[in-house]
Length: 241
Ligand code: BJW
Image 1: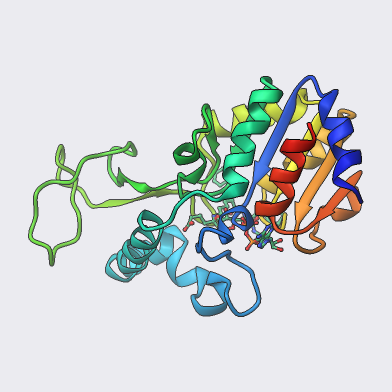
Image 2 (image 1 turned 120 degrees about the vertical axis):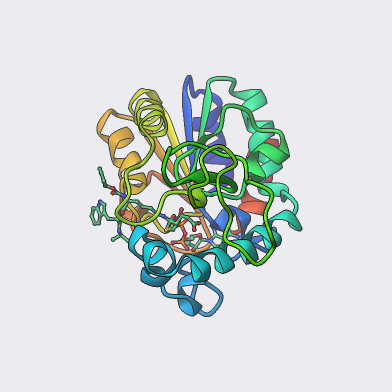
């Protein structure tokens, strides 16, 4: 389906909700989760790395994996897709951006008010106090500990089986329920509750646009399916507005 037709609908949008997933950061060199061969879950077991039980069992292993990803992300740059969303927000000021990504690349591209549905990998959170925390100065070999209370720190992300932060969940639900156009970018739509946001929007009568390199679990419910890399489709969409 054509970018021009989707741009026509976007141009008349009053409230736009955009949900992004790891596909938008793929062109920045950050691996997706479920991509064949290159996806993180092809090479790493989520049960050993991305659950609270995994962290309890082997915090050192989990921390090693997250430190590796932090370095990868710190060395990456936002791409044309992230920048195009900043441009689209300029044209449609009532745009809410919800991201499942933990990489902070939307903010680094200049997006404001981003709802980080699954947290942010660059932040540490105290396992005792449950809030973002500074590290106590420590020997490099030791696990990171909270500067305030000394408890173990963990990455401030949402693992499988954990609840989404109430502010993020309420903000995203409201953005989906109140939009008249919902655009999903670079997500397989397999992980809930994020994957349910398009359905909330659809049931409230919003038009649904999907940007992805291939069909996903939400494609059947989309009004416009724009097939192609986000780094090409989104700039084309922005300049057609
Ligand atoms: C491109 C592209 C390019 C490539 N351009 N496109 C209902 C039904 C079934 C199960 C559940 C359910 N509700 C809850 C569950 C359980 C579970 C779940 O959904 N499991 C499913 C896998 C079956 N959900 C949870 O556990 C959630 N918590 C929860 O529900 O809590 C309930 C609760 C309530 C109260 C108290 C306690 C509990 C939490 C989910 C947390 C997900 N966490 C992760 C890791 C984050 C931290 C980290 O990064 O380490 O989040 S998993 C991973 O998946 C990550 C992602 O944000 C998320 C989504 O992945 P995404 O972004 O869609 O990536 P991919 O790889 O799947 O897709 C990439 C897409 O891009 C593909 O389509 C490509 O084609 C495309 N693409 N290049 C455009 N250039």
